[in-house]
Each structure stands twice: as structure tokens, then as C-alpha cells.
Image (cartoon, rainbow, N blue to C red; front, side, top):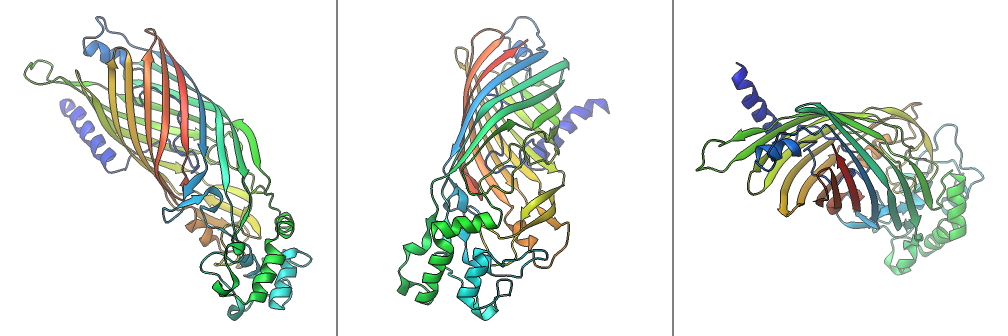
Length: 459
């Protein structure tokens, strides 16, 4: 029975990886869903001493026990792609900001628009009280997304330093810990008033209404006063914080094929499994700031596992496949903005307390590795497709005015990236590396590019 265990386990892990049912330590943030912590080849985890002995590169067997990595990084994005895959400003990924639509829908209990710019605009444009419901036959919607809309271009920058520690107390088993410190800047270029981009004859609105919308909702003074009154700060965002603590334990083993057959290439099959978790110790998103971002999973702990395998041809290259899934634990969030009308987009006038259960992340990846293709220089490339499913948003204090379903629909995103890295072995124990994470395609996510450099010490 024992002699069949390893082959059966390997086939099972290969099947899991191919069908996306493994788990990976991806993140909840769509600006940085798969952060770089090292330039080293992923999933080798202190294996180079063993694999070099099996490849006859080292004369004596050597088991690496410990590694420590320091990785400064810089990430940037000016654009993203919306739900339709079209390029969009970062502030428009979930829709341009519809100022006029904030007048629609019932006012939630305990709230009022009386004495606010929104209430004043509702009275002047529709001739009703500030808290009255706009009749359906009076609702005005510009399907072209111009009259009453702001477009919100942002510049996103994230810089910092990350650390990785791996230990291997016994052969094939070990643990890895990752942590870091980052500074995030997200700055507003300017609010673009899309009402000014159309001429009056081209709109479906009466000219008087267009003028009223422009004067009461879209002027710089009125818009900023409105944002202030609904408790939303639109200043540039800049903050720093430690990042979430990431950790996992892993198993992998090297199986050699064709060792005694000189007519066939020597191949090393390396299946692996790792069980992972994230501790939410980073700053969470400040919901009172329109352009704030979290430094990790926004306060949500996560667990997961990854499984896959590699095929390492002794004298040529290595490639592999892996799959993953990440589960995020729910938490209660205060001042969470929820729409009170299906027409609203981009910005919502009211907030409430919710219980958020994030959707899961799934990942599928393909790896390529050229070990020492030039002297002591190695190269790897990794393609990753990460998909975040729909969140579940539950009102802590139920109110029929709120529509959490609309927020749930906006929570899905998908990212495809390509990680590339060059590593140079300066000494038997020190490796220097440069890496980049290139965006390929996105849906409702940032088009982020990351550059990083690592110093890796192995003992």
C-alpha cells in the first residue's frame, strides 16, 4: 500500500492544480492582489542544496535550514479596467460618480437631507421636500453617463520594504513567514465634470434642468460642500502602515525519473502542498475618505492552501502548474456606504453598519524557470490568474431604504499578471535579484505594475 501512496498523492495534486481547486495566499485588495515578497523562484523553499546535489552540481548533499529575504518594492497605477474590460480612471472602476442619482431613493431611518445641498437641489429640481421620494415618472437618467456625472482620475503609488523568513527543520517540511511596511499615496488629479462635455441639444434633459444640475450639484463649491455634508472626504490620501502578517507551512519532495536510464533525460518531479494563513494586523480602509485603501485584507483574516507540481529537466528548464483558493473570514464594518437607489453609481449619500463576508479568491498559475542559464544567473516567469468572487453584505440594522445587493454586484474582480525575475548568486549563501510584476488584463481592478529587488541569505 505504501508504495502507491506517493504516485497517488502526486496525481491528486496535479489534478487539483489543473482544475483551480487548490488554495493560494492571495490578497483581498484589487490594487495589489498578489504581492511580491521575494525575487527568488517561488515554491522552491530551501530546496536548491538538495536539487543541486541530485543534479551532480554539488559533490556533497546539503540541506538548507534557513533563509532571510529583504525586498524593497514600488508599485504604481494610473488606470485600470472596469467590469466591461474597458480602460478607466481608477476612481471610475465601479462607475463614474452620478451626483444627480444621489437625490433618488428613500431616505434611510435616522437620516435627513434637510438643510443640505442635496436636499436643496431636490426641492429646486423636482419641487418636492428634501426627504420626499422622487416619483418614478420624474426620475431623470442620462444613459450616456454625462449629465450629472463626475469622472475621477487618480494616481496610485505604493512603496515599502518586505521581509520573508523560511525555516526547514527537517527535510521536505518547513514554514515561511512574510511581513512588511508600506506607504500608500492615492491622489486626485481633478474632478472632470462630464456635463460640460455635451451640448444641450444632445441631452435628454430639458435645458433648464441641465443648468440646475450644473449649478446645484456639479460646481466645485457645491460638490465639495455636498461631499462634506455626507461625511466623505475627497482630499488626497497618503498613509503608512505595517502590512498583514502572512505565514504558511509546506511539504514538497523530489522524485527522480530516469536516474539509471542514460537514453532518457533525467527529470525531477516536485509536488508540493502548503497550508496558509493571514493575520490582519495592517490598517483597514478609512470609509470616511473617498480615496483610502487598506494595507492588507481590510481587517479580514484568511486561510488557504496551495498545491501543484514542477517538472525539472536536469540539463534544460523547469516548468510547473499550481492552483489555489483563499477564504476570508467575515467582520463588521462601520460607515460602510450602501446605495439607496439602483440608479446610483460611484458615490452614495448614506452609510451604515454592515457584516461583510468577502467572496473567495481562486488562482491558477503556470511557472517557467531557467536555473543558471548564464553562469550563476537564473530567470523565472510566472503567469497568474486571480479571481475574486462576489462578497456578501448584510445590514446589521435592516433598513429597506438600503440596497446591499448593488454593492455585492460591484465587489467581483479579476486580475491576470506576469511575474518575472533575474537572480544572481553572488556567493554560496547570498543571492541578489530584480523582479517585476506586469499587468496583463483586469476586470474591475487596478492595472498595477510592481518593481522589486531582493537580497536573499540562505544557510
